[in-house]
Image (cartoon, rainbow, N blue to C red):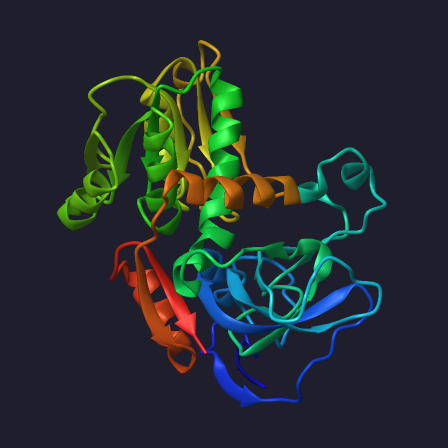
Length: 331
């Protein structure tokens, strides 16, 4: 097999050839057709997430077809199209797993971080954390749904639960996750307000094309008070202005796996029962719900394709904000 491998934090990924992996008990092997490039991959490469397994093959928005099945696996056929997300394995023993909060497992494994991921042409996955995708849609278009879509969906659910009602939703950072979630929210009858880097008219226009009723810079105030705001941008300094944008009882949901420090702010911004909450990983229920819902709502992803060998260029372009939507690697 061929793969792009991170051997050292902060270093470019290296193209290697290695023996094909084989699935163990409870695992399947997947021939990869597409793998999305997620901001979390940048956090892994940059060392902003502690204790990665090195060397590691990054990538956790994987779409491919089962080509080998390990002992004890049922429910999958050779040639079936599946998707593999960030959460790649749980212990099934800790209190979190037992209570239905497997996203908070005490001994998890993460695809592209502690177990090899999708910047390759083959990957071995825990069969319990592989989602059947069916045959509708192109591989590259589906790939961003496996993380950008899933974490957006979980953040959206938490925002609604925390705020109580969700008529007006603010999205800070309008990249891969926001462009998917905006479509879901609009088609379910919510108003979306998009916040981008100040002066980024191109992304603001893109947000309006995705259904936002208003788009402006993160230094601007929304024209109406919001029920909730979801922060996809990993910028802690956005938390105070997001709080300021909320009605009484509203919620700010921090949806990234990594964020810069949140600066101090006056208690008055939090008072009146506003909340700040975070999102951690996903559950298989999230995956099943969202991957069933997305085609029903007609969600379309905007993608820029790169050959697998150009993974470093894709990461650099993501860092620079050089495209709308999501980058996807094609082996």
